[in-house]
Length: 437
Image (tube, rainbow, N blue to C red; front, side, top):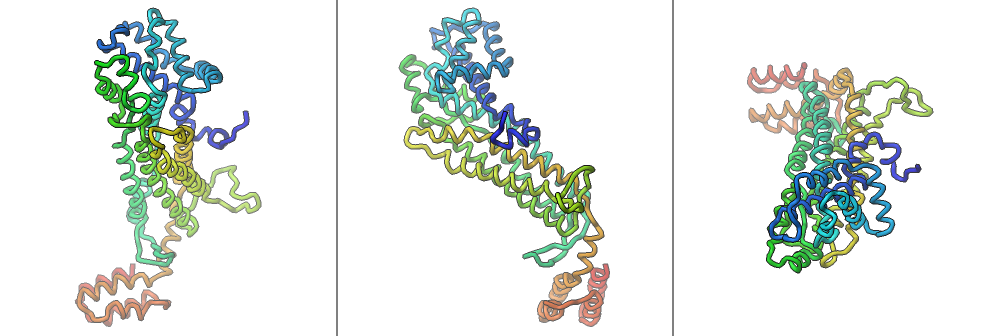
């Protein structure tokens, strides 16, 4: 079978963990879950007199439809859809057919999808889908990725190295601190992911429970809907049009956009460290870095990560901009866009897979780090001028500027300068110690 998307072809094995959440088969399974949960919930309400309470056996058989859902069921739904040309209706017909085989339920199948519009089922299904994917896959994988970065930070907490501002040598830093910058930034986004929950809309064709009220005008439908949505682990929306306005998808898209953007920053920094020789990479036997240059060990994992994070962000950005906008009570432009949600998460997961692989191959080259520091003694200027200013030495900054800016200086030049300056002996010794490290 030919594949149009590399996520379903070349990269399938790396993102397969997301298929139980974001495939079309999975979406139909979530739709079944919503329809069955709704039918069971209705049966428990005394106000719905025409639908008696289910027996424990009947409820067990209904739930088994979800538990036993397989490729054959998925294919059957698609077969029905070829006739209906409507995916939610196909799920409804499939469920009714299944229920007819459960003793005592055949006469009550019209309570399947009772009073609902397809968006009632769809938005709850997407809500279950995204909540589940975040909890079971996206957040755990992101935390594992952050732990990898933190491991670099902890093992190199005291490794002093040259920093670059504007691409130019600047005050020394530590590898540990530089890595913790990313740990802190990414962890903040993780906390927002953990606190996030999808919302739910459940009110019929235009959000007013109109069809429900026509059938059971005395029944408290709004209270029922709120309770039902909470039972699915979703935050109930009170006032809506026909659709969930998708502010929830926009929110999670923005969080993941930020997470991805921070990771792009991380990818580029590691790429630069590899380019400088600060990090080398483990050589994997059998791998080829270039078709013509045998010596190459390229930072491909970080380049792949950067590229796929960009693809993921392009989609998340579009979701956040497009989905919350719908003409009047609804238009259908959101439907086709939502179908690509799994693709955005897929490129995100693919990127993290690449970055984790790349991090696992990194080796710190302390010799290169020390060579860089030794080649730039002018970095000492900041420390020296600050101590001079502490003691009121007039023009401390300007003196250092004259000595170092655009000039080649040595540690010996700094030591000679410090020996001549009039500051307390204790601070003079402290500076000389720094200079001679």
